[in-house]
Length: 469
Image 1 (cartoon, one colour):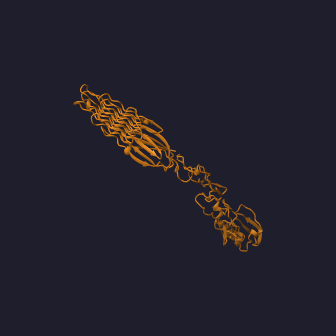
Image 2 (tube, rainbow, N blue to C red):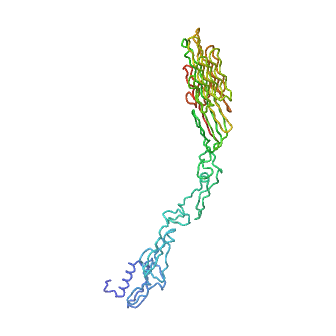
Image 3 (cartoon, rainbow, N blue to C red):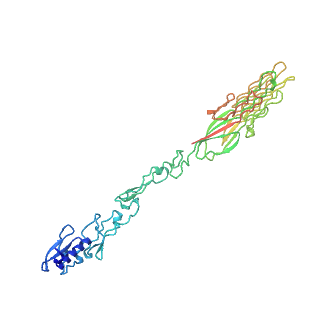
């Protein structure tokens, strides 16, 4: 049918239908005109699937078929609950805002759909409260559909209290605070690498076991903090060997120097205790005794003149080993704290005589009324000679801890006696090697002078002080 055969009113109706379709309107009710141009029966053009509506939603077409605002509505709903389109026409008087868009915090803060001047804008989700949902507030802050999923539990307290704490937790949007554990002890006295009393410091009240070594000399110190036990090990100085020059006619020797003695004691101490330690030296050579850190601890001088006797070890309040006697040579000195000096050899006629070695000094530790002593070794006797024989060796000096010096035969000088030892346990030097736990001593320490070398010096004393709880 050509447009020339269609009445003008019908053309206007068709134009309205096309306009409504292009605007996306839900449905337009159109009243058809009769053939003579009057209003006749109604035909519904439902763009929403043909659903009917009531008379109030139909717009009565006037004679020129104009469509009113009340006749145009958007009835289509988007997948997020908001209007599917933006800019659709709407009726403000009857419009119901939609708040169904967004998730979690974005839903509660969204901008609902609205109808302004007959034009509808869709619902707009709000902005996320945070990039992750780490706060325990019962809200989906990052709008991902999960609540408080990034909350991180935390421990609290120091040291052992932190290790045993009940970590914080988020339960139904309410945070349960962390509870620190109880201290393991009121003071951190165990050296276990842990903060037992939860004060942020590790083992600050503990004794850290250690051992300190001391060579010849005088020392004064206090034990380390928190240590209550001190173990003392002392070695006295060794005596010097005697001279063998008298025996040039035959292979004779001066007497061997005595090894220094050894003493050990275990004591109770506190940080306020004051320890005084004196480590003695070995006999230095023929005639020269070992020097003590205090004069009272020194050894006795060896005899140097023909058949001269050795001197006693210093102090004299404690009697050490006796010096050796000889029939013609000098006698060895008696030991006291330090070892006695050896006696010189005799030389009748034109034959030469050997000088004697000096005794070693004692090593002494003092703590309050307690004293630990490791006596020095005695000096070796000098060799002697006569016209009829090739000569006679000197006597060996006595080792520390009170051993007597060895007697010399005929013209040889007697060895000096060893100094005294005092402690919970003590031990004489054995030959040239004194007590040495686990080869702890430096080479030569506390040894007596070697008789193969004239007037060979004795080894210096030594001390090892160990601490524990």
